[in-house]
Length: 328
Ligand SMILES: NC(=O)c1ccc[n+]([C@@H]2O[C@H](COP(=O)([O-])OP(=O)(O)OC[C@H]3O[C@@H](n4cnc5c(N)ncnc54)[C@H](OP(=O)(O)O)[C@@H]3O)[C@@H](O)[C@H]2O)c1
Image (cartoon, rainbow, N blue to C red; front, top):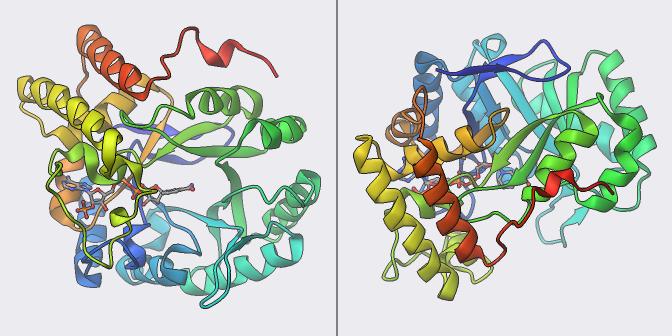
């Protein structure tokens, strides 16, 4: 298992982080808690020690399931959870980064995770109201109180980044959507890494399952699966057709390596963003075992170029220059 030490921290983690969104058991199709618990045990056996979750995933269910799976092994892993998306049954979801809500959300996450500290506490989305100085001040207070060890940022757009510039070295991880079927936040990934000196993490690393090669134009999703909705663009219309071309290329390249499409799509991220950690959602041990085969090999320069070409040309936003060279 490849390992990486997260910048500005003493945290050494696997270069594979388990994504806890499906673990919330809500609107991701069929899921079983026993499968997740089994997968958490498999992760520890395979040397995966990094878990990403959020208070909002299944309204706390993801954190509860993670605690249940870790049962007594909490100190062997690094837990990253997020706050700020205030989702309540029957009410509209709002983003709230206020210190008062942060304190409330943190206590609730600690309770659900059955722990007295969170390794990395992440601002899920910027609320565009609370000044970053207030958020950082509160995060540092919680750090001093021992309730969080470090903190991170997620989905940082240029406006948030510009305001966060003075906090270089304070946040340790960042998260953006990135995969062969989503290249649109690439500039933000590099800018965040450069401006805040963070370790970048990618979400939707398999395009919500698209890049596993198991979906095509005939695939349908059940009522309890968000991917049936048009805003999950990877599975609908023109974008789906384009994604299937990426999957074809992925299939050819993965065969040469005796790997699956999923492992190869994750390998692409590991090689393309060499300091990064992909976050990958899994539903059971078998998916985890297959995805972990992304580790400890490389795509060659021609294969990387082919994958880059097909994903950029399809997205229609080919990168003409290295975007992270641009300054704000
Ligand atoms: N910071 C943020 O705002 C943010 C936003 C979204 C997600 N995230 C984090 O990033 C994580 C990853 O994103 P994601 O879960 O949305 O999507 P993803 O990792 O791109 O896709 C995960 C899905 O792919 C399928 N899959 C995974 N491995 C497979 C395999 N080997 N074979 C077949 N199918 C496989 C599973 O669904 P099926 O089997 O049903 O196809 C799984 O739920 C999340 O879990 C969450 O922790 C963060």
